Image (cartoon, rainbow, N blue to C red; front, side, top):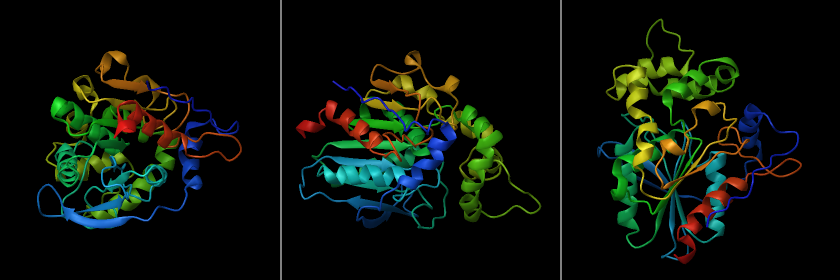
Length: 312
């Protein structure tokens, strides 16, 4: 039975913004990744897959989908892959198009379940007999949750974890467009996002929703940001998930206010909700003193263990 250890942050670290921003300062050096460039679902662009290989060919495989403008060097990816490596399992961080330092002609987005299905299918072909486990963070978590709901019993992972996902994209976009969230996170994301698209003359983009309206939506066939959020958010698909799935959101996540977190009536019986008071967005710092980032990977891997990983 899955019994997560309570998340207790350092006594001095209780603010959601602080927990979000501080976590990166605890990042350890990344594990040694073996990179492969493999075709995307359209057969046009290449995706970067960063592997952590196990000496045990039959060990389980944990695939990670990163967040907006994330990579295998994001603090949460490093911490999880190091833990996977320590346990002797296979791990892989699958980058979305244009991420991981690899250019592409097509953009990625929050609801790109075509690419999620393609990546999981490619890995299942490579590891046909091993158990396959998937974890998605933030944007990658929303896309993974949507895929799981769309596919139901046909979903490829044996179990999954969805961390800090903005399952309600309308609410998340609104939260990121105001106050400290707009001050802290918007410039960080736009710094790299703006480099990947053609600039529109005489238009200064200062909000993520504005970027989505002018770039993400039209580049991916949506009629503006409202249509993009409505069709890409995973919330309507949560009742249709049949694979064991851990849905983890901190109640003080600045990207998705607590009143918009899903409740038991909005998810299927296969979904385990875990909503600690603290954690921020993909932070989840715990322990005394400076704190550490071990709570998240240990929690996720114990969830997988509770659904059969220990017997793999």
